[in-house]
Image (cartoon, rainbow, N blue to C red; front, side, top):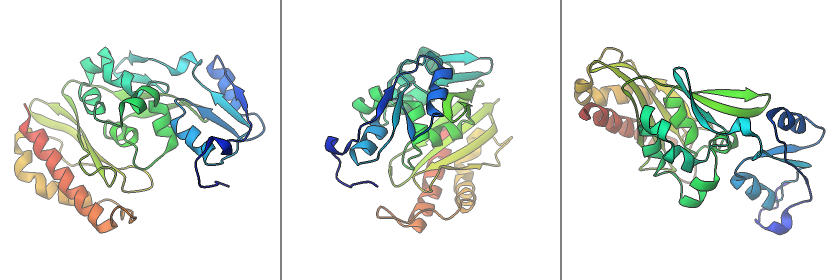
Length: 262
């Protein structure tokens, strides 16, 4: 049971395990008892300070298979232990998917960017975190070893775009991923964060549409997209009806922005 007041005094004793391989990490996680994986540790340490008790903490920093950003054919593969700062500074991402590191410069604060990891951001499943909607907009897939996230794979193609609207975060965030060919849209998808228990996506029926026509059609496209989502959450930050309206507004802004860029 969580105690409620965050303090180091609430951290119960646990066994710290430092595996040196993916196989050893999976074995430690499957041992009897309550076991948790630790990457950057930002969320886990907060939970322990709130009184959550565990038997073992599996510290993943020594598992090389979970590190690094590389190109695998027509995908870019990001290890689960990759920090947000590494996403920003990686030369491969700057070359094949420059929108991602550009957006990531505005995510969180320097301490979190240099400590928090892509894997931790995804596996914590916090509704207001950015990695899941951004990666969903790009059509990314997860590579897992048992319950442990190993890597994220993002398909890459020429003229691939990722745009973000985070001006109302943490009430709502909207990401737009698109592939362009010859001045027309090959495929497009929006992913919405902060509005549901998990990020939600909608594929936009824009295949073959001229990019330059998006501004004129943005309002109608955004309206249909917003209506396709399940009822958003109502909480202390905003009502579900407000969030749905803002899905429409922010999607329209992203479509206009995409259509106005060369």
